[in-house]
Amino acid sequence: MKKYYFTSESVTEGHPDKLCDYISDSILDAYLEKDKNARVAVETFASGNRITIAGQISANGEVDIEELVRQKVKEIGFDNEETDMDYRTCKIDIDITRQSPDIALGVDIGGAGDQGIMFGYACKDTEEYMPYAISMAHKLAKRLTEVRKENIINYLRPDGKTQVTVEYEDDIPKRIETILISTQHLDGISQEKIKQDIEKEVIRKVVPENMIDNNTKIYVNPTGRFVIGGPLGDTGLTGRKIIVDTYGGYSRHGGGCFSGKDPSKVDRSSAYMLRHIAKNLVANGYCKKCEIQIAYAIGMKEPLSIYINTFGTGTKSEEELVNLVRESFDLTPDGIIKYLDLKRPIYEKTTNYGHFGKNNMPWEKIIKM
Image (cartoon, rainbow, N blue to C red; front, side, top):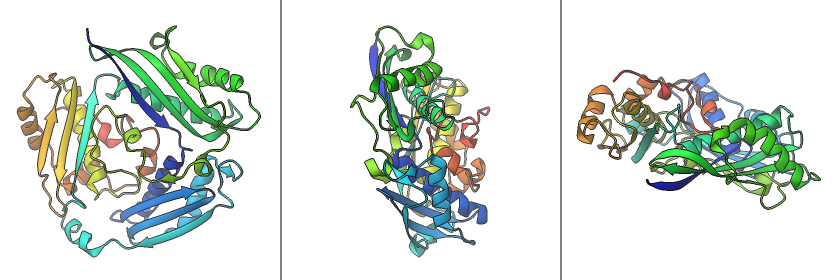
């Protein structure tokens, strides 16, 4: 019997990096509402009580970016510059230019917006075909936000992180070894009360009883205090949570982030397509877990290579599966965009708690292969 432990983390929408991802994706959606062919590559940086927006946008239509940013910061719950950030008083700097004509040359004819490698993954750990550790970490982070926004725990602030260690036997999740939650809170709340409330209202509401035993270790705010948070506690930047966004480290990553990029950027659209393909190879019984890699060159339509690894679980050879994928899907950038209908303002919904495993996203649809 092979036994091992695997750990993944997630963060709440009030984590400074996720604040930046959310702002970038909200700007993208706002421009896609004006122009479905908008080209957007936007980065957000947050530090203290200041937000900087920079990047390239080419679109028919204008967006009041400053007003949008304040609205999104408010939505997350940042309203106190003494502890994190205040949507009413934060400084907002904007530096936006048009897309480089050199990049546009290749994209305008349907080529990839950049070179790069992307990965997709799926497995049978969970009903959403995601690895167990990242699935549970996301659910805990989402619940942590819910109890704050619904005032179930009224002293919480927006910033927070979760981490879950899962014990596997023969590649099957058997139990949870460790749960770690760090949550921002108002001053004057005892460590004992925070731990008690988080265990009752977050952990016990999310984690199945049969996955926790007497040996499961639970840690809440292990430093003993987490009052200063958000961009006041740590700077935030778009694209720094790429493992949180994907498979929690269980699969490899090509290095490109998703947020703030329109679908002509294959970093985003191709990763979505590969998740769709991997999930359907597993769901259709071709394997129990699957990792797929693809490579593109800037300006070129067809991928340079396709690689599939089923980790010895395949019912067909990996070469046969690659041929099946090539025959079944148009993997050009335009083909992916059309197949997944990606020229829509759907990206704000992807930002938090993972881009994969959400059944309302087009790349999560199960088809017959």
